[in-house]
Image (cartoon, rainbow, N blue to C red; front, top):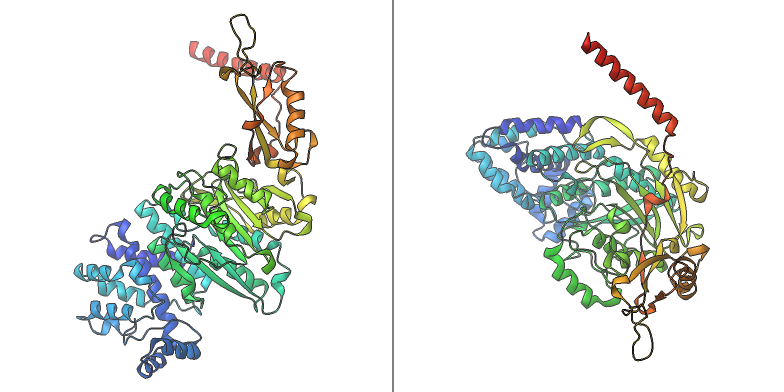
Length: 581
């Protein structure tokens, strides 16, 4: 639990009455951010004001401020928390002036609609006390580290969402899950990350409050303090966008790299590709309202568009984000890109052969993009206890990994939390995380109880249609004009034929021989008059994760069961005797 977050949230007690608990966040969140920025700006405030008087052109002022402070953002107001309370009658107007005079890239208070809250606080007679309470908290980075500030943001957001009964998972991802994702994302390229002065780019299309971006940066800087990770993100929730952007601005990142908007309908970084991409998109979220725009883009963009491989069901948009990230990977000729994305189980197997989801999996596997899939423990997220998986994609796989996919069962690597946070009752400790990462790095030498390495074509299959003849009243086949038996639709059946049937490694290209061998061995001996309709063959891909880690547990012997029953009967008889007495 964040001590700072608890303290800041306690300020909300002063709002009780005029504000309901589900409204506290609309005040506490923006004021926390404003105070953080206020503390950062304080040491250079007077010098920046002088520069503002000297440079009327905003572009020139920005250059001058960056040269003076090393920051891209600034504020030219005469007000700050240090003097806002001096003018009691003008507090609301002066606070609004303070917000208005941030540089253009600090647009976060607009997305909080904070001016409306200022007026509401003043009307309720609460503005002075709330501003005073925040002014007493020192949030300068020398006092509150970026990591601690991130923990405080996370705590405040969770409290706000609990009060508002919203889906907190839409806004942020637990830090233990992010740390595992980051470790896996960087694991294969760790050697490269130690180079002096390296510059890498990281992109999150569902940035939320910025937790993934921040922790990825921390990971890289811990290994190589001279490295630079340029962070890019897009977020559609106004408050989450405001928090994400404020947090990254405060840490010295380029604010223009965080954009507001819906990634699926308006890619803010169209034409840009990145070294690393990561995302925890919302699970099972309906995208019907965007379907027309997405379909239009797919039709217009053609075979090289981001949604070209296929479209998932409109009831679940996870795989749209998966396709989007594939499109955002830096091309192999430019050094390649890696993707880490957290999804629930449905993208592994949903959709029949040649459906949108199956075609998306086919695109990923036939282009050798899937490097590893890790099953996470259940009850890991604040808003859901369902099974979740980390997918790692790479378009420049290490030679040992080419043509292969590693499945890792990480469901047993967890530590019980002392107190549940929503649905989250488990966390991945440092030791748990190290165990999962070790399984990944050991690859084909990893413990087979927890890691399986399969070929890409192990996940492919054909659906074949088996026909049987339509019979007349005498039991004879009815034939067409060409003398061929007519099929009986009531007896029609389908079979799934795996690409690797009988050890075949031909993939989709070995169709004729493998299907015929399967039919001859598995169908014909049981139904002599059957035949294949070669025109109806379909190709499908699925990843039956649980099947590969299934362990058969034999049932107890009859003797054991009888012994247990006798014990229970004896207990019941003893109880009956006591009642009779």
